Image (cartoon, rainbow over all chains, first blue to last red; front, side, top):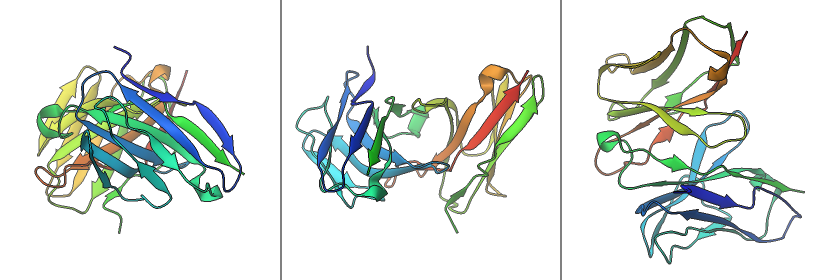
Length: 116
Length: 112
């Protein structure tokens, strides 16, 4: 299993441009998540999904959109990029609710985004 | 007050030292407590998990939860340079709001 894969690894965007961060998992997990991590800060939840066709907002959803048309894929769309969106973005997945019975979230390697 | 507080460090220790990493929290409904390790330029990976109060040991790592003080700790014995990483605590509420809340992470440097 490749686990959780993310593309691209690194991207520079100009202000106002758009892009899609790709996330794929091959573990047949129902739950998927997008986080952003700013330097010295913890992980802030952007959006999450409990299954194909179901998405919900997290703590910091403004400026982002998601879709979940398949179990495997959970792309994150940035429209009209702003410097405040400069961050490292992590996608994660879990089979069921994390924490319960030791269920863990599996994280991808991250996408580093710089908006200039 | 943030729900989960964690000192970002960095914490620098010599090889072989006992390391203590800590988080405090304000939400008494948290029941699941996790520690993630994150190497530089990598995603976090689960290191330890505990439910409710008590201790859990796994090799050189011990996770401790004190619910009365709303305080959790991760101890690393005989620390190694390979333990150099950022350690994030995370905790969640059983039932409805199950999404973990993460601390800021503590950067640990173990020097030879």
